[in-house]
Amino acid sequence: MANTLLPHDERNLTPDQVELLDKRRRRGQMFLVICFQCIIVSTLLSLWTGQDLTYSPGWVHPVAYWNAVTLLGAVVFGVAGVRLRRGSTEFISY
Image 1 (spheres, rainbow, N blue to C red):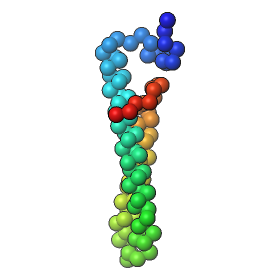
Image 2: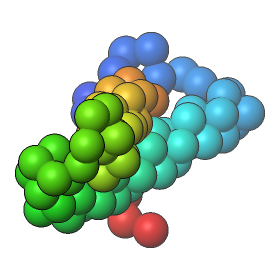
Image 3: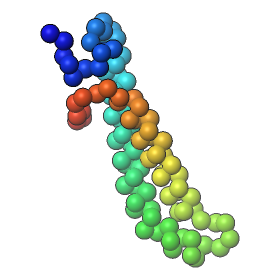
Image 4: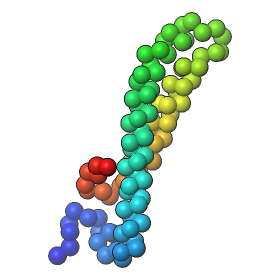
């Protein structure tokens, strides 16, 4: 009997196709881990962003720029990670 938790497309895969699917999902899990790390760094940087925006002259706001870059990285890696892990029905812990 077929595993009903699997999507219909994944029920009759060859071993090579299953290996590629697992690699894709592991890469998606790695991207999600990077996303959460970027969120943590961005949260810590937000503690100094207000001070940087207040006291830095002109357009020189390096902490604010790094905060924006890490937040953008979190969004990019999060979206890519969710897309690569699509169809996974289990929690992968490495």
